Amino acid sequence: MTERSAEILFERAKKVMPGGVNSPVRAYKSVGLTPRFIERAQGNRIYDTEGNEYLDYVGSWGPMILGHADPAVIAAVKEKAEKGLSFGACTEAEVELAELITSNIAHVEMIRMVNSGTEAVMSALRLARGYTKKDKIIKFEGCYHGHSDAMLVKAGSGAMTFGDPDSAGVTRGAAEDTLLARYNDLESVETLMKENRDEIACVIVEPTAANMGVVPTAEGFLKGLRELCDRYGALLLFDEVITGFRLAFGGAAEYFGVRPDLVTYGKIIGGGMPVGAYGGSREIMENVSPCGSVYQAGTLSGNPIAMAAGLATLHRLLKEPELYDRINAMGKYLADGLREKCGFTVNQLGSLVCMFYTHDPVTDYQSAASSDTQGFAHVFRELLKRGIYVAPSQFEAMFLNICFTEEELDRTIEIYSEIVAEGR
Ligand code: HOZ
Image (cartoon, rainbow, N blue to C red; front, side):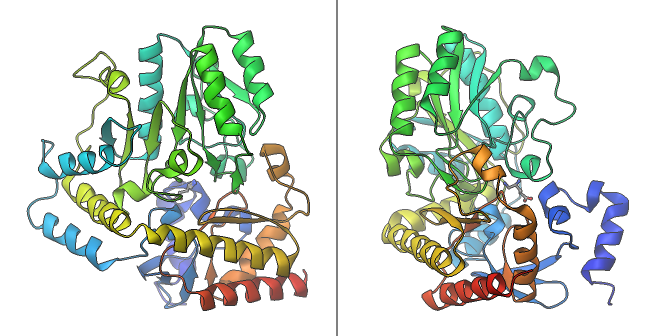
């Protein structure tokens, strides 16, 4: 064991950080291993401090759609960094990124940059409430919208992984205006709207859930939400932190052809740097301070280095729209292969893939939670030994990036099927 081995580093980490990590799922608790410590990454490969190389299906949980250390993104970051890291003042780069997005996504007429998806959602909810003058929010079981108090109610991702979908420390007051509906179930939404007539500020949804594993919305579900929101006077908020710029440049809204009133972004919009954003129509967005009375601010918001990474990433995606056809086709190829060779339920939409350790359809929180998580943990440990790096939780997605080749996907399918055939 060297002083850079994962065991030694994790022992040090646990003494000074809760669970040894800065974000819970990274602790590998649910898979019973010591986490890998990552030193560098390139394209679709990631390397740990012990010199191991892995094929990376995490991609920093979504942002790295162009692969790690993309030359154009790195060059843009270096160029900007040499001019200073942060000014807490207006810059040209933030105007360029806002223009790029608003001129290519019809439902985003104005946008506000923040620093994370959590911050984007928290701010967008405040805006929805400020604009509608209503308090209640409808959220879906198993959807994850970051870790602000009101959203930690039956939440997915790490909260679901560790069996704490309702976090301690959230006051009854903070959670009582969050109403829970069943994912892919329009009736449950309409019932809440009827019971809380004229009180619903917005419905927030992951337009393809990717934090209870990948659970695509059923045919007509998003259109149905649009109609219900219009009928009952609520805003429709798409949380596109994962799906934005991934399913299509215009995210799930473009992919499914449904227009949300508000949208939140994260991950790809920052090209690997910490960026989140929320946007919508001019009429709604002009309620944000200093135009309007919904307050929200941030010293690092619109940070020039983060804007440069986001711009370089989005420019490439806009210039080469065929990348979406390729990456989405790869997602289907991987999912079809895994399904055929392993026999389990595999959900996929675009470049988001997830194998559930069940033979039953997974369409909502309950069916996702029925997956055999011990089976997942076993496969995870074997994958890691054989050089495949996936998220250490059943309730996260496999993210593809444009660097994958068909041969690598075939190898992955082969390795998965060997592990499943060997049994536990
Ligand atoms: N829960 C986050 C993904 N859905 C994990 C992020 C991280 O650990 O970096």
